[in-house]
Image (cartoon, rainbow, N blue to C red; front, top):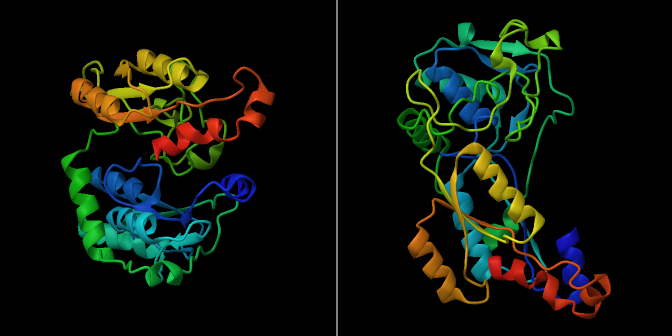
Length: 300
């Protein structure tokens, strides 16, 4: 709504996309599909909220990326495009498919747990407007699930210690240097984890070697917006977590300087926290309406 308001008020040329239930490699395992895959890899039960009759429209990440590209080049400014699929699946069927691919007995491996609050029975997006632009879903459910399983089995330690995310009812992700959010005060997970177990704690990704001490993950972040609050916070989080990072020297409006940063630093991830707010005061922003959102446009 905020983006649409800027488009209406200031003529900002924006296109809005809406999507849900994207899945594929690299996804953090608090989401259903990677969570079930990692649990199945460990031979553990797959917890289903409620009776598993909830329906979702799962769309493979590569198809979503292609949709973004089509919308970017063919979409109409000011319009909204839904990115989805009409091929719906019940959560219970997703669990059964994963069990079958891991040669697990669904009747023994699927456990029904207390439903989570506000668990919608169905999500549905009409993607007809997107299809008119020439986009179509290419990856079948079977192919997408196979690719996703292959990635997680080949990269089991990508996210480090994720035992907290694999709980039937995860709480929240712990911030580096902060306290753990312990879920042991509630009994609904007691059948999975004892009250005194460290498994009730959410942790951030840390790569481990065997049973020894955690080692520094093979990540390197390139961060823009050093003088801003968010950019500074990202740097502090990286320091606490032992993640290698550098602040970019290039200006966002100078494409060649950005490419130079990427070539010299060779990051695994790039974060743009640059922005213009309140310089020198709010009145300045009101009288220079294009300046505050310029960094965001350059990011795109």
